[in-house]
Image 1 (cartoon, protein in one colour):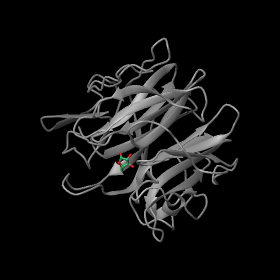
Image 2: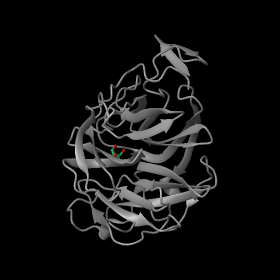
Image 3: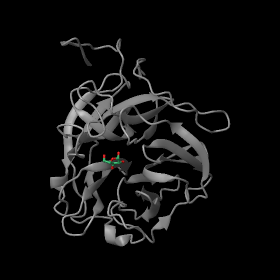
Image 4: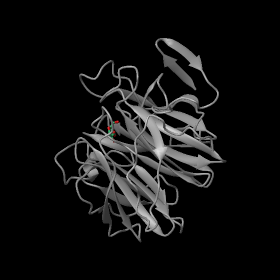
Length: 311
Ligand code: FUB
C-alpha cells in the first residue's frame, strides 16, 4: 500500500495508515465485488475526467484483488467499451458474477446505434479474464423500456443467482427493473418487471443473508444508499431506511455488499481522493457492515480508517 504525506511517498506492506480511499493513484467508482478462491475481486469503474467541471469521462473498467481486505493488488483495466462493437463509450457501472466456473461481467455503456445507454455482458474463464463480449450485441437497450423519457434509464446492472440456481438481472435509473436470465446468463428469460421501492435513483445491488433478500440502491440526489428487504427475490420489498449518508464530495453513491471470511463489508465510492477528487474523480472505499439481530442493517460509518485488520 502506497501512502504519500507532504510529498513524501512510502510503500507499506502492512496496514498502519488510513485505508480509505483504497487507491490514490487512480480514480475508481461504482464498485462491484465477488469472492472466489478465498480472494476478493473488486471491479470498479475508472474516472478519467481532468477536473470536476464537466462530466464523467469513463472508458474502461478496472480490477483489483485482495486476500485479506487490507492489501490490494491492481490488475489494471480488464474490459473497455471498445471491446463491445455495439458500444460507443461511457463505461458506467458494472457487475460481475460467477456461474459454473465462468465469470460474467455485466456493463453499462452508451449504444452506438440505438439511442441511449445499454447493458452488455462479457465472459471469461477466470475472474481476471481475458473477458470478451459474450453476445456481440447489447443484452438490454433503451428501446426495450419505453416508460421513461430519459435515455439513461437502462444502466447499473446487478446480477443475482438464487439458491435454486435461477439467475436474475436487476438494473435501472429512475425506474428499478429486473428480469430472469436464461441458464446461459447472456439472454433475458421472459418479461421485464418493475420493482416497487421508494425514491429510487440507481445503483441496485441484491444480496441474501440467511433467508432474507436485501435490495440496496442509491436514493434521491445527492444520493444516499437505502435498502429494502423481502422473503422472496420477487418481492414485495419492505423499505428499511438508509445504509449511508451522502458520500463525501460526491453526489453519486454506489455500493457493493459482500461477506468475506465471516465478516460483512460495504464497498462504496466517495469524492475524497487526495489528488483532486470530486464528482467526476471518485475513489472507492470500504467499511464494515453490521446486521442487527432482527436482520436489519446498521447505518454504515464511512471512515478514513477503513479496514485495517487483515482477515
Ligand atoms: O459512474 C457513472 C454513473 O454514476 C453510474 O452508472 C451510476 O451508478 C453513478 O455512480
